[in-house]
Length: 229
Image (cartoon, rainbow, N blue to C red):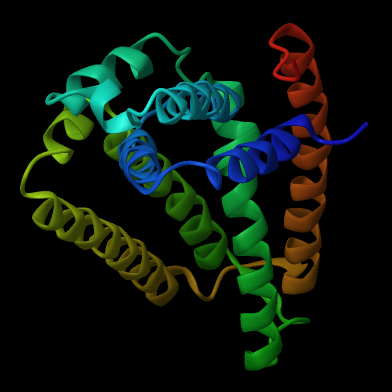
C-alpha cells in the first residue's frame, strides 16, 4: 500500500498550483507559520487540504484566501492549529527522530570514510557525545514548536524572528560540538571495542525499523481520517 501521507502531500501541491497568486501567497504564509507548531504531520497536511479547498472556492467566487483570514491572520491560524491533535511521543519518534537518524547516519558514515576511521573502535566519548546531541536536539525541537514561541514569531518583525531562530539553531549546534569535544578530550582513551561501522549499521537499521513503523502508523491514521473524497 502506498504511503498515504506522501500521496496527500502530492495532492496538496497539485491543487495549490491552481490557486490565484493572492490565495497562494496566503497559503504559503500559513504553512510558514504552522511549521513551527507541534501538530501531527498527517493532520498538518489535512489542514492544508482543507485550506486549499477553501481557497479554490474563494477564487471561484472572485475572492481569495487572504480575505478568508482577514486582518488578524495569526488569530485564525492559531484557531486552526489549536483544533488539531498535538504530537504524541510516538509522533516525535516516528517522524522527527526518524528524520534526524537518517541524516545523522549518512553524515556519520561519510565522515568516518573521509577520516579513514570506519573500522576504528568507537570511544565512550563519541558515544556519549552522540547521545547528548540527540537529547539537546529534542529540547531544541520542543522549544521552537511551543505555543509561546510561535505566538511571538508571526509578527511584523518576521525577519528578526527568523534570524533569531537560525541563531538559536547554530548555538544549539555549537553547544553540541563543544560538549562532544570536551568529552573527547577526557574520555577518548576509553573504547567500547566496537568498530564505528557497526554503530553506523545500527543507526541505519534503526532508521529502517522506524520507517516501517511509520508507514504502518500512517496507514492506521489514514484509515481513521480519510482524505480521498
